[in-house]
Image (cartoon, rainbow, N blue to C red; front, side, top):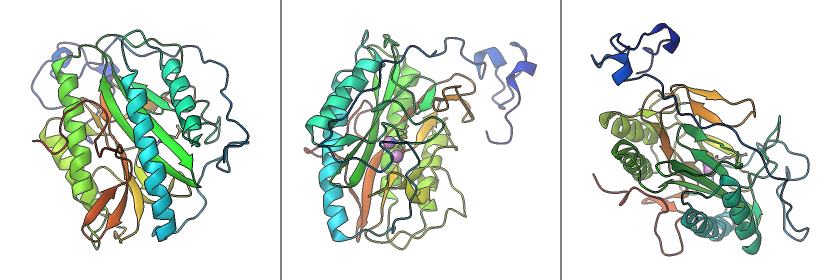
Length: 332
Ligand code: MF3
Ligand code: CO
Ligand code: CO
């Protein structure tokens, strides 16, 4: 679909869709009208003084200080513990997803669970203009990522991605998953299933000595063969003592995404897969990323370390399971 995207305002409902499907625009890529809209934010939540904070916690800022891509055994061991705790928090917040629950209530729960685990919720006050105001990202339906928890109530038929990052023992564990809210339409269920499979295939492509572009190729091939598209603007990233650092991991194939994987590198794989157009817009809040056509996206994310034999996932639950809907990631 890249390159063929046209301004939607110029297309009439009965025109043939621009995407080449041969269908009428109104039966194909016409934007959805029922959009997610912003709602009120609750007051900022505080973190007890005794909890160790990342450097941006007081004054905001991006966490892009340089850090070696290959981590020491000590950093990896701390990332195992922090990652497993992040995975457990993601599962528990996901268990609270239900019609009638607000995304702010999910934030309150995530915030409490991070503190109970002895860690800091990494999103809180991360970034600039403005810093992220909450402790988890809650991205509903056409929100691709970085949705800000607010007073919006989850509705039967919604889908929601929860992105949990925990900072503990001086390192971050970053993981997310997508859930169905109540009873969800078949296309959305398929989207979630395929997105989980894409994440799995990206992980299976991790091999020392190979360029990271193998990961993007595996994800793009699977998504597009199932009729979905890959969001381009948001990428996987190195993670460790920094939240976002080298290398960049594209979720589509690009020959210049050519960092060679080495044993001990730690990074995330976190594809965002779209039913329709992959192009995005950002809300006036400076964070919320939505699809231009209002069609849905899903996402899964794990933090991993490259090993001799492939990838070790650092953000599985303590029982080695994945969060979210979509069944067995290795199926299909
Ligand atoms: N957890 C997100 C990621 O996967 C980053 C969120 S940045 C925030 O990289 F500020 F929105 F939290
Ligand atoms: Co991430
Ligand atoms: Co994340």
